[in-house]
Length: 371
Image 1: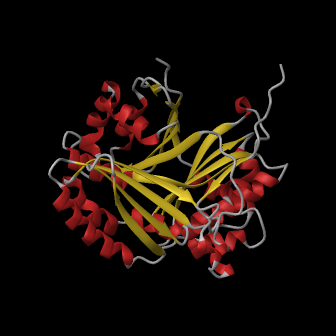
Image 2 (image 1 turned 120 degrees about the vertical axis):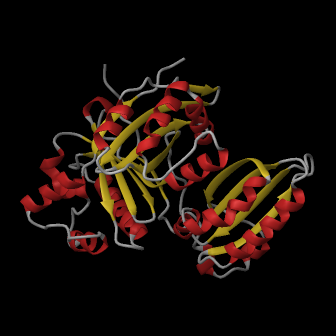
């Protein structure tokens, strides 16, 4: 039987289009006054953030406990830099006492109508998304945290030794794949979900086998957490979030022919987003190159930590420049200026050594079991 290869899939935070963020909130009874005070404080803080254009606070006309905050940003990168910062964590903390449940959605602006838009200068109109992107129905997300140096082997054994949770979350959501990597004392857990990411993460967190693993690694974490305390758990997972900023699938190779790898990049202070953008450019070029061994790439970035999850055919050492993300004139120097530490070596042996040092150790890679 012939396997039909998929079409090219691409999603990116780097296309320059305006971003619309939608935050849905369900308030506790009697928390309206406290919520409005917290929102005023937050609104004033957000207004000063570079890249922020506007926001609106809306209340449901059907259910007064339901609220909506929408904000518009020049593009995705300044919003992601803000929402993943410690300043944001502190700014939204007062809302936690008021809100029963939240859901955040992010959209790039593709089309726009209305008199205000028609009268806007051409430069403003040019910030619309150029064309619809083709997706595959999969949401990709990662979490990262560090463990105390010297405990890596113990933690790796705990993380590798657990039963996979059931895949089916609800009628519209399924946990598709979980891959867990380590690089030194840093742990990265990458998940793929069909449907609602938040619902899937909550589902996984409630499973006994997962809770047992999380409790078992608690003594080894560098950052203390108490998962039985909602505030402590929320703070930990907020700081651990490692969002997807770019994904591309070439659609040239069969799933059974590729292997999964992850590379860790430590950027210089303040250079994480620029480093992720450079790697995204490389991956878009690779997706257009029929000779590329890279079938797909997902780039996760938070602050100065960048992780690149790759699906590739054949030994990655054979195409070290392509796999590292420096396949092209001047790429080594550009990447070297953004990395924390020594520049990327440009000779063959040096590049192979850099690839070996940046490749993360695969602890487990599993499809969740069906119910």
